[in-house]
Length: 343
Length: 262
Image 1: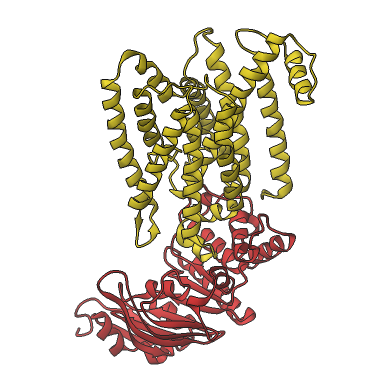
Image 2: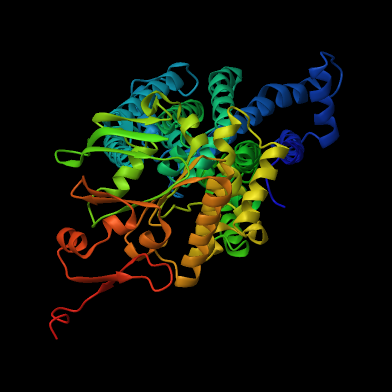
């Protein structure tokens, strides 16, 4: 009998957490300086316990100040984008929905590019702040355009988001065409997603939104199941549909805004991770939300690790890796798990 | 049980329902009939407050429905609608368990008792064998039975059915209607069903509400409502009305143009 129970959710989450921890350790090991697996584990565990003594000072710096923050940030963003994608797919009842479908990303990008053109570097605090404000502005605009008589209409919301997104994309093109060569590189990397400036501050920016967002969305997980078969059906079963739509829109959008503001636009994760998890574990949000978060985190950490090692010392934009490796894997899954029908 | 007090409703400019007043008695099977666009589906949507009337009010056990909580309504009134979207299909058991939603409050997971109630509902509707099948692999008739099971899992006092026999062959129609009647007779469920099938309404309903252009044209027993004069006036076509040879209820036969004169 296949139903979702607390035990099943806990078991699968635990297994996926182990996978995530494994991926984190592997990513700590790999890079231009190879730190053996056991030693990097040792460095991490000792520092967690407040002890010193494992590995050289250089190795400690590489692991603790460079690779660990980067892995944590990639993990948080991967989890955030995956949950946001799953939520938008339910809210808009559209399997093609992803975190960027309602233009949040384009709003963030326009603001970020303006900030870059004004001379803010990717290291500064101003860039994430600017792109977060840009994202918030888009979220609000799309929300008001997508409402009629005080109600959110998923299709109107979708159209409003896509059109605002196209408008903002035109602005992006405009800014790119007038920008100088040095700025162009920063802009392009931002647009394709970049973890090379990861630090503790970025982690602190995204963490509260992600934690609160996941918590609230998970609290509504059962109701998200009900709204999948339509709003009327959800209302028949006693769901306050307007409140649910508003809550899930805000949570998913804010998670996306926070993610985008710390590392630029990383495509594909928010689309394929929820679908992959659905194909394997089914559509129930009580499992889909935690499983997407953990799989998304593992997937993005792995992708980022590949992006910085495969052509080392040159770093590739992580978005290239998510698409190149994620795409074929997803198509394989789709063809083998009789998944065509579920889409 | 449900008292409708002079309600009027409009989506935009034009009134779709105009000054309707009637009562639904506990334990009855009430049929809502009438031509396309006469307001049947809209009326059902008002009865579970998917829509709210601009004028008048609806009382459920003397309580104004607009003051009731959504989940309170869902605990007492279940709906089986015409078609439901299946974006990412759940299994049959998962779908039936969703009927427990109004009883779960803020609980995230169903309890032992919810599973038991869902399975009992599946026994009544003979869908237990389909438990693990995904909804999108079922036939139209099976799917309908699953949605009835979902409605029963809500443990409601009233079930609202919108065109319950549409898209079903006669075998599944009879099976479905027998199930509804059994639930009505044995479990005291109040049934309200909107239908185009006047012969079915006549045969299976205690009373009929005949709508025309958003108003009540007639309300009463099938014998009172389904007459040659009434049908011809409302639908504007010739029919022949006699009695069902077994049950004696009114029966309508459609006529080709001019065939009565021959």
